[in-house]
Length: 216
Image 1 (cartoon, rainbow, N blue to C red):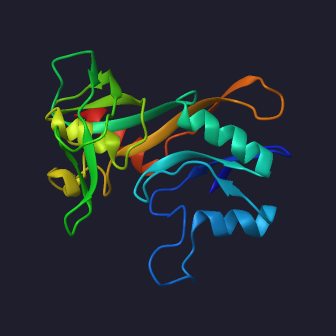
Image 2 (spheres, rainbow, N blue to C red):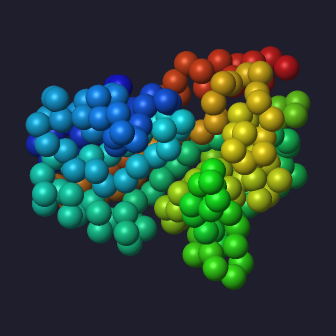
C-alpha cells in the first residue's frame, strides 16, 4: 500500500491488487485496507471502493465533515474517475460511450449483467490508448458507479478485460488477474475547495503486461 497524499482531512492510497477494501467473510483477522489504514490514522471513512482484484487509487476521509463532502461529490458525479484496462481484441473505434443498464448480484457467482428491463442506468466512456497484436489498452471513465461496471460494459462491447474469467475472458498469459487499474481521481478538496487530481502508478504486473504486449 502506497500513500499518494495525506493531510488532516483526506488520505489517498495506491491499493495493490488482491487486497480487499473491507473485511470479507467470517475471517476478521485477514488483512484488509481499512484495517491497515486505521492502524495508522485511528479512524477513516470509506467514500468509494474498487474490486479486490483491481489495483489503483482509493480516497478516504479522515473527518466526518470531509466524508460528507466527498460522499456528495461521488453521488452527484462531480468526481472524475479514470481507469486503465487491457482488453481482449482490438476495438475498431477510438472512443465509445456505453449506456447499457446493469443489474448487480445475479446468480451464485454474483455477476453483474446487462438488463434492459430491470437494470439501472449506467454510463462508461472508453478511449483507445494503444493497439497491440490481439488486444488493446483502454482508458475507461465511468460516469456512474455500479459494481463491475467497467468490466461488464467492456464485455458487452465484445472486449472483455484480459484475465477476467468471471466475464468470459480466457485466462491470460501476460497477467494473472483482471487487468484493471484505477489510474486517477479528480475531486474538490473538502476543506480548501480547490480542485485536485491524484494519479496512481501501475503496479509491476500491469507494467510487465503492457511491456509484453508492446513487444509482441
